[in-house]
Length: 100
Image (cartoon, rainbow, N blue to C red; front, top):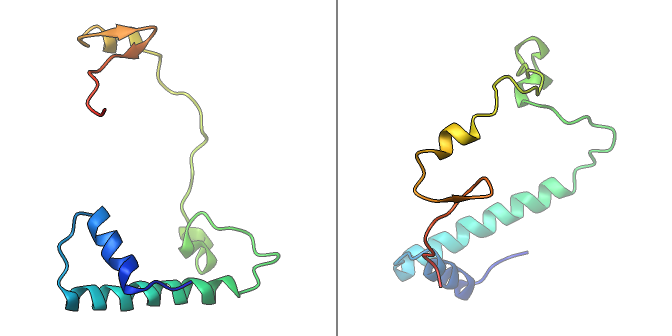
């Protein structure tokens, strides 16, 4: 996959960026470089490679990220938190509509 200059200009409009023609050309080259790298990475055979929770685990397993068990450690305090809210309904916060 590669982008062309019109794609970069469209992305700039969506991101509300004001790019000069030179900046658009530089951005095009950088983005196409990223896509090229992704395509190269897709060609690598990863069959049988276990995913790591941290990249350093491949080199130093003793320094890998130690994940704690996913258990609830606090009590449910929803009602206490919602007492300060201006409006709630069925346990949800009500907010004014801001997007039409």
